[in-house]
Amino acid sequence: MKKIFSYAGVIFLVVLIGLGYFVGKLQGETEKSGAASMENMPMPEKKSGMETGMPVQISPEKRQMIGVKTGKVERRSLKTQLHASGTVDFNEQKITRFHLRVAGWVKELYVNSTGQRVKKGEPLFRIYSPDLYSTKQEYLLAKNTFEQVKDSPMTHVREGVASQIESARARLLLWNMDDRQIDQLDQGEPVEPETKFYSPANGYVMKKSVSKGDYVTPEMELYEIADLSTVWVYADIYESDIASLKPDQPVTISFTAYPGKTFSGKLIYIFPNLNPETRTVKARVELPNPGFLLKPGMYGDVEIQVKAPGRLVVPSDAVLDSGLHQMVFIDRGNGLFEPRPIKMGQRYDNEIEVLEGVKEGEPIVTSATFLIDSESKLMSAASMMGMLGMGGIRMEQASMGKMEMAGMDMKDMDMSGMEKKEASPRSKKAGQLAFTLGFSPEPPHVGENKVSVKV
Image (cartoon, rainbow, N blue to C red; front, side, top):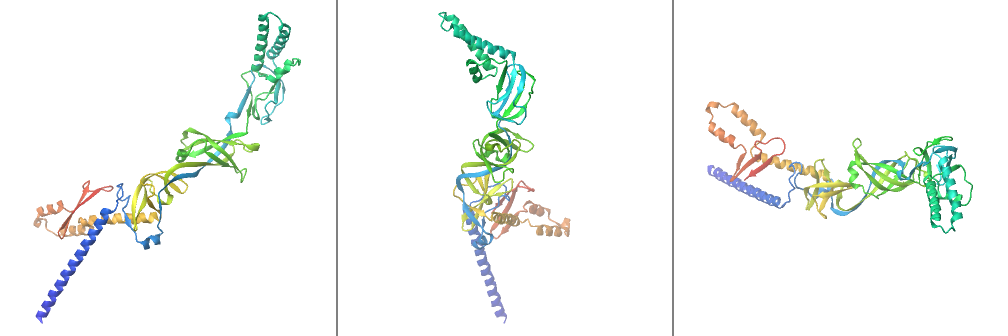
C-alpha cells in the first residue's frame, strides 16, 4: 500500500512539472509574439505619454457594437460661409459736399429741407454776388469787343481781346457756373444780377446749412448730398475667421425688414485694426441698393462665401481636440488603430483642415473616435501599471513591509542587507530573467517622467 502511494506521489509530481513547463512555454511564446507585434506596430509620436495613448486592437464584434467607421484623408477645394452681423452705412465715395467759391446773398432757396431727394442739375438756390455779376458783364463786354476787332489786321489787339474772354470764362467756371449757363450768355440772354446754382450729384440731402437771406462765403458747407444707389455694410468678423477673408469674395445679406429677400454684394476692404473689446475686425461690403430699400443704420445678417484651394481635410468627428492637443486615429487594418497627433488649420462646416500629421489617402477613424481613445488610454494606463508592478512597487507589499518592520527589533536587523534592499527597490527576478525599472528624474514626481525597463 505504501508503494502505491509512493508511485502516485511521483506521478502527481511529474504531472505538475509537465504542466508548469507547458504553461511556462505557452507564456513565453505569447510574450515573444506580443513583443514581435509591438516591434512591428507603429508607435505614436511622443507628446505627453498619457495624452497620446497607445495603439489599440479592437475585435470586429466590438467595432460593430460601438459603431466604428473609417474614411480617408482627402485633398480638395472647400466652400463654406462665414456668418457675421452687419450695419448699413453711406458709401463714402458717393457723398458730395457743396461749397460756393464766391460770396453772396441767398435770394431764393429751392431745396430747403433735410432728407429731400435731388437730381443732378436740379436748382438748389439763387444768390446775388457782386463779383459774379461784374465778371459776367466783363465776359459779355469782351465777347462784343472781339466781334468788332476780329477782322482787324492788328494781331496783338485780337489776341488781347481773346485772352480777356478766356480769362472771364475761366473765372465764371471757377465760381460754380457751368458751361450751360455760359452758353446762355453767348446766345445773347440778358445778364441777370442773380445767379442760380445747381446740384452736382444725385442723392438725398443729409445736411443743409443755408437759409433764405443768408450771406454765404466759400468756407461754408451749404449742402451734404449722399447717393444711396449703392451702400456700404460693415460686418464684424471674429478673430478666428480673419485668415479666410479675401477681397472680392461674394457676400449675401438678409434683413429683418425684408423677410425672404436677400441682397448680393462683394467684400471690398478689410480693416487693418482689431477691436480689443469684441475681438473682431471690420470688413466693408459694397452692396447695390435697388429702389433705395436699404437705409443707413439697418442691421443685417452677413454671409461671406469662402472658397479655399486644395487642402488636406478630415471630417470634424475624426478629430479629438483637447485644447492643447489634437489627434486622429489611423486605421492600420485588422482592427488595429494608431493614435496620431496632428496640427489643425481652418474649420470648414463639418470638415477640418490638417496642416501636419497625416498624408493624403491615409485611412482614419471618422466615428466612435472618443470610445477608441478611451480604450487607448486604458491600455496605456494598464501598461504603466504593469511596469510598476514588475518593478516591485506595489502598495500591498509596501504596507506589509512596514508592518513587518514595526515588529522587528532594530538591533537584530542586518543594516547592510537593508541598504541593499533599499538600493534596488525596483528590481525583480522571474526565473532566469531580471527586470530593472528606472525613472528620470529620480525619484519620479507628479507629471511627466521618463520610464525605462531593463531586462
